[in-house]
Length: 183
Image (cartoon, helix red, strand yellow):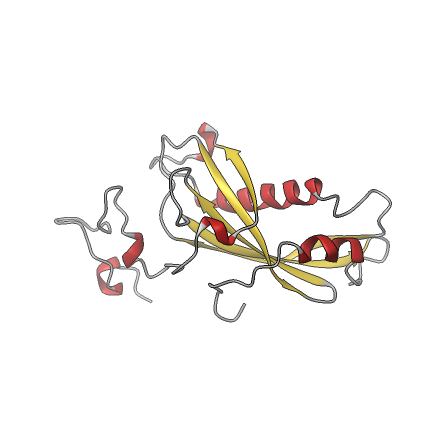
């Protein structure tokens, strides 16, 4: 795929090499769109305050932070639902993750809302879907997923998902209207 936005069919602002739009980005024309995704598609939300260090020298949230925001949502979700009580012999590790950037999160944004849902449940794994939203917008600025694999704390080998975890996750299952091809 060409790196030149014009060659990908992304409309450019007049006299610019940047995609068109009020903030320099035309999400509707983006080749990275996640058509149809909305805030209501995600059953769990956590609001994340942005720090000055989250922004890069171009004034938008650095792409590395997006995975950190997903991690904050997972931790908040697990804590809010007591997914792994201290006596549990099983835990989960992230085995795969992905983020699709739809439009930048620019300064002076103060918070970002991270929505989370469960997209798939297996015998020893779960796929969590995420979307990052500006406070005033229904369409996401980014979408992504993490696959967690359940393991035995002692042997570090794959283990069946505990029923307590499955019961919690089942309440948040919402098969994605958008999925990354091959994921």
